[in-house]
Image 1 (cartoon, rainbow, N blue to C red):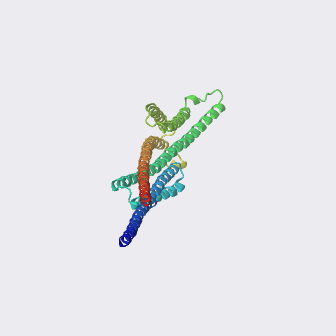
Image 2: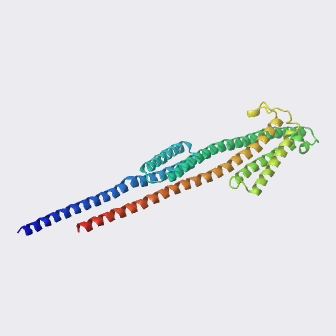
Image 3: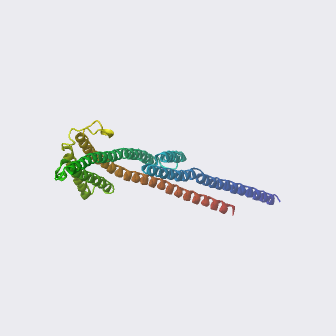
Length: 325
């Protein structure tokens, strides 16, 4: 009887020990599953969400820059600021999650700094271009206005000449051989050269390095200089005050030469800024693409971690089932 009792007691003890072992194994498995799921719903989830916000922040800034380059400066400023804040907060969240290696974060940080720097340069260049281009257009308009004044005066002189000749029987006015006639002709040619030069400028905007277009612009500039020189050297205009408009206190010849020189300088300055603007805009796109590529790499890495953690959780669950079974 004692032997049987001992055997029964040992059997109970063995069953109790087995239950304890199963409980401990189940507890460990549960902890592993909990840890794995915690990583998925914690740092990994935070990182994935932050990457999405970061990409949206970069895109929002790019939309703002496009709006600024199209003339919507007020709306663009708000979009750029909002996008910058979104991207900055996203980077901080990624850093706090602790899943991304430090060297990769440093690369992203460097690219974010570069992205901001290029954006500032791009917007500054745009503002500079708008100012210089407007100055060029103003000079073109002022030249047109001055040529109109000159043409009106010379045309009036020709009318008077014809009138006086008509009053004197048998006399020819000689208008076609007069200086006034030459002035009217040179004025018309100068206006044509001026408008051709404006057309050449607009053609160059799409292909600023095109040799033929640049040559055409030099030809129109040469023509403008020739006709302006003819006008400035005419006796009816040389040392004569303009008398009205923004150059009322200056002489015709001095004003003509001043406007021709300004046209040449402003044309080249505005075009060079335009070239720099195109290059900087291309650089801005490249930096933005590189930054978003890093963001996508971080996203891919976090998804890999998710897969690993899910596999680990599944393995722990299988172990627990095997032990209990």
